Amino acid sequence: MIDIHSHILPGVDDGAAAMENAIAMAQAAAKEGITTIIATPHHQNGTHDNPRPAVLSLAAELNDELKRRGIALNVLPGQEVRIHGDLLDGLARGEVMTLADTSYMLIEFPPDHVPKYAEQLLFDAQVKGFIPIIAHPERNVEIIEYPERLYQLVKRGALAQLTASSVTGHFGKKIKAFSFQLMEANLVHFIASDAHNTKTRPFRLREAYEVIRKEYGTDMVYYFQENAELLVRGQAVFRDEPQRVKKKKFLGLF
Image (cartoon, rainbow, N blue to C red; front, side, top):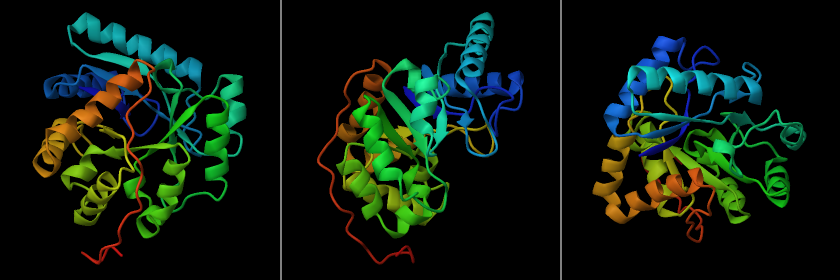
């Protein structure tokens, strides 16, 4: 399996605190069947700045340590970039990174809203040849209340990534139910761990795929797994025609 979103790099954000924590995460990932993981430390989210040179250096150091210890995991560099008005300038300056040196970039919204300029900015990024992936939209307060926000972004070419722990229900029944709605509406294209540690925010990627298999069948699992492989190879991913989420009155979600 390939995990496109993780906080495994040591000592740079709210993920692995030190190298030993990163090694423990790597061991857990390998045990789960993950062979390739993209390290996506937070960047420009108001708390953490992890520019390209620092990420490349740490990813290389971590890979060397994994090889030395015989842990079969390949770490690729990336960032989880908080959306901001100067994002395209950061890309041009080489501070903002794409995922694994491809055209795909992982974009994080503030947890409680979608900035008004987001649609135009993500479209402008595509014009410049980048493909934005919206991280964990199922946990964004505004998207939960107004799924149309995500529909419009995906309709205009953006992609989206669900968190494994959302699919398994570890963020609650409401988030799990909403995650299912987004999958059913073809509004998400990847499942990733967003792992921060081995205890409170572990990988759960295998468990999430098993939940999807039971709910939707093996084809849906292959869809997400193949998209992760295509991303790492820098190739076009699969995407079905997005649909509007049909609002349901359940569990107090809407």
